[in-house]
Length: 291
Image 1 (cartoon, rainbow, N blue to C red):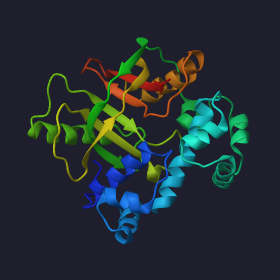
Image 2 (image 1 turned 90 degrees about the vertical axis):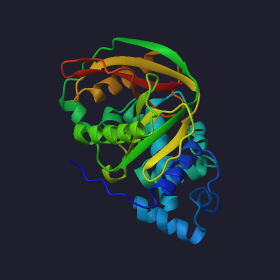
Image 3 (image 1 turned 180 degrees about the vertical axis):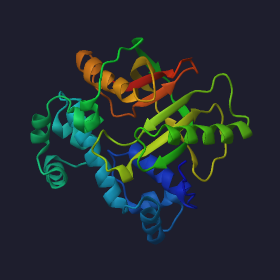
Image 4 (image 1 turned 135 degrees about the vertical axis):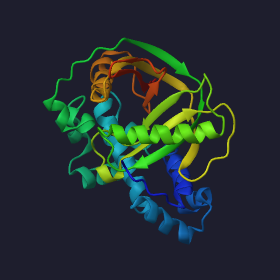
């Protein structure tokens, strides 16, 4: 069983990370972010580094570049300058310098070398050594209204760790059940904050979430944020614990390139619409944000 340390500052730092991820295209200042965390500028940067293991601007730059690298591979029709500006770079020159410093190659070279979708970069090396075949039960286009989500978040290695995910779901369920927040309309999601296989395992972040239909006080490592309205391509799959990656692989490398849609900048999601199970398989919906 994972032992997850409780940090007294995690609530404030999660709020800051949520704000950064939702505003990558904007100017992000220490003063602005310290107000969100309710710390002085002096203490804020030290607390951020203490909680995350990264300095503030190192975190922002890493997230911007990893998202840009992901978008370069996942949407080859989108221009490099458009991708650069969507993640907060002022222009082509500043993006090119930062990207080459991190990846040792230009954005255009990275895209050319890896093709439309680089399977290793997006899904990991292990996927090449296993059977990737899977078929969806169905795929549809859905427009989702904005959703208030309550979440618990984990930072660190999580891939293939079903015990960790069970722990996180049970933790959030018990917290919500004590506050009588669970109803027949409650929806359950998982959000992966990293971008493919570009993120070092120690910095991976995953949020297990549930929908909420009213305001509720949160604290500690239980947080809340609003998932914005938008369109999604939704694939339904019956998967065992080893097949989630196959479902993601299908949606990104088979469905999306052959659809008429472009990938949007919003979060991709796993959604658990019911507790439908068949043996060790369960129903999951993969939500790909589109425009």
